[in-house]
Amino acid sequence: MKNAMGQSAGALLAAAALAMGVSALGASAPEPQRPVIASPQTDAIGPVGAIGPARQALSPLPLQPEDTPWPTQAWSVAPMPAAADPQNVARLMADAETGRTPFLEATRAVLVVQGGRLVYERYAPGFGPDTRFLSWSVAKSVTHALVGAAAARGLLNPDAGMGHRRWAVSDPRSAITWRQWLQMTDGLLQNETAAVTLASNSAAVMFFGKNRTDAMGFATQLPLGYRPGTRWNYSTAGITLAADALTERTAPGAPAHERRAAMRRFMREALFAPIGMNSAQPEFDAQGAFLGGGFVWATAQDYARFGLLYLRDGVWDGQRIFPPGWVDFARTPVQGSGADTYGAGFWLTPETGTGTPSRALIAGRNPADAFSAQGRDGQVILIVPSQDLVIVRLGLLGGGREGWSALGDWLAALAQSFPAPP
Image (spheres, rainbow, N blue to C red):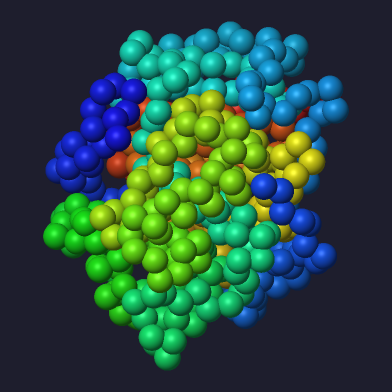
């Protein structure tokens, strides 16, 4: 596979291994007769509902305006809304492109969708609407979506033990629920965000070390260190285990090439084709494991489609892609200690303070209801229900956590340039 710049994905991944530090802080189914999950606004999530912070109220998710076509084939393009501030947008873009905003090393694509229409789109030289960008950990949000689509089709119960083809049923790790894997409260003993070397970074070892052709060979050997559901720990390995377990549901017991083909078909039919995300290219290892913790390629416009699907509560042009409540699950704080800025596959704005374990992307509560998919080097899909807004930013980012803070302030200012529709 090659990206739009002509480089092989394998070469890019090998190069990334040298630079990788910690992960970024990265056919219509019938409608279920009842929600597969309880609404997080009215009921407890899973078997550990008493653990963790109190639930915050969630902003309503806006409907697609009746006069706005769904962008399944092409985006409906509109000028900036009358209430927008184009001068501030121009200033922010100039700051990003000239280096006046620190740590924003290269901003390669910025898209703004409001009211379901594409109202702003800008690319750096050499990039454009047909360029596929690497998701990095935005793929974790895609994995959340795929698990939701599978739940809607009755392929799994989010509150049941997920299991894995390499674990015995009696293995205590088999009892960890899909929900806990997606919330990163699985309890596996592994080290990622606190790692100081590549050799101690679980994600680097899994994707770029001796297990690079068999990611699950590393991930399935991680032991339990905590009671599942009690403690949050950022885990690319855990999300990739969930991606592989879902792959197995599509072709149980099949050889690697059949598992890959079956999972690609499921992705296309259950998620990508219905929303027009036709550029999406997921990556698999040699054993047929979908690398759902970090490796999906797609165009900026297709990442915006993905954001709009979450803004629209998992419904697309009359078809429900996710079970009712699945998007609320994504944007509700985890039920476990250690984080108030993470939900399930998405990052959140905390109710109070700047966030735990580190500053939230949007720290000033403006917009307070923002949630986002995030990936290494500043790949972001920012979703703001109260403003009917999706912002996609793709590029490079330096400065570690300082860089993420700078990017968050920049994105908050950009979002404030597009006030809520009247």
